[in-house]
Image (cartoon, rainbow, N blue to C red; front, side):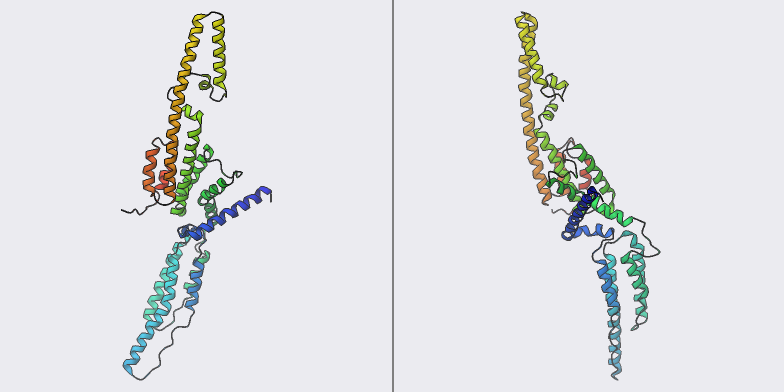
Length: 370
């Protein structure tokens, strides 16, 4: 195994441990683990029910000689006998109500049918022990996912467990990477590469119904807000981007060659040199035009500087507003539908918030207080 593979293994183990810790804290994550065949309670419930089915039933009452009393005691005995096994059958029904691998639903229906048959048999044969052999076999196949007539597609569970890591665990991976400045597991939040990667993960999440969970949706929505906030912070301090947002710019070399540093200094140094040369050469008309151009440039640059400062102040205010919106959403104060409305107000052009975030916020139905 190469060093890269070993590092990947450690990373996977760390991410899986983080998912397990969240699973222990948030029971809402249980269905997606169960869909991958990783249920916690199924085997325990099945074993308890099987043990209960093997328990000795109530002892028949002794005959007292009093006909009325013997009839009453026999009736109570039959009811107790029925309840004795029905409690175990109820535990099996509770097992079937737990989330599990969806492909096992036909087997769950077969188990429910067998339970109905057994109850009917016990009603028709009061005080007689039914044969639970078929039920026990079906329950074991249900828990172990190995029924011969319902084989799971090869690699199904492995694929779902990988999806748990790659899709459900992606926000946790990003959160972990952001804490370490030397971690290169994900691109920077402000990069186009991260935006593309994030949109692809969210789209896969939206298309994978068994992964849908309010907890994971909240993770993705929070990450989308963090990325939008990071881009807005960057833009509020990036003078080149602020300049590019100006409607009308005074023509300079930096406008024509935005990637050329010190372009304006070189440009005005050349113009100043030409102006002094024209003055010393007594070329009054070219010199006058150059002086007017330089004077107008000074005024234009001052105007552009004021516009950029105003734009920067506006973006800084929006950064603070978005930060408050993000914090209120993370703490649960703001519901997703209200957050979507607020985001549309603050980002009307859709420059920082993608449509995919609104699809995330509309994925679930939330209870709102009047």
